[in-house]
Image (cartoon, rainbow, N blue to C red; front, side, top):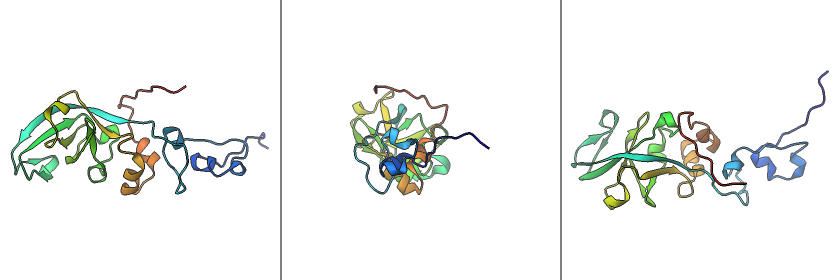
Length: 177
């Protein structure tokens, strides 16, 4: 009783399985972001996303200081801690605390103190202060920190992380044709 409609059973990973999977149309989603969506590597995909945030402040803390919700992290040495303007309300999963790192000035730095609603703390003690002043950017997902291994560590699909990036998070689209 319904009019004829195009048939599609192929999403991103199905596109790489050959035309016999496509039927009338195929729908790509994660592949548009350069995300591997299959256990078979898909040639030609390159990450084209970047989740970053500005550093709001940098503070010196003595060894033994507890930082974060309920003092979840005890600093083992005198530390320089940067606070970045990103948290779980912006789409950074709370599990990212143990599953990923941030990149500041091209260097990987650990997260400390848990992930708050709109802020995340980074241990920048080992970086030169000139690389991480307020206003510098900390990158959480991108070429240096692909989303796939983080998603695997968190036990979810990469697109589940991408779709958590909230509407309150500023999105900038650049390049492309």
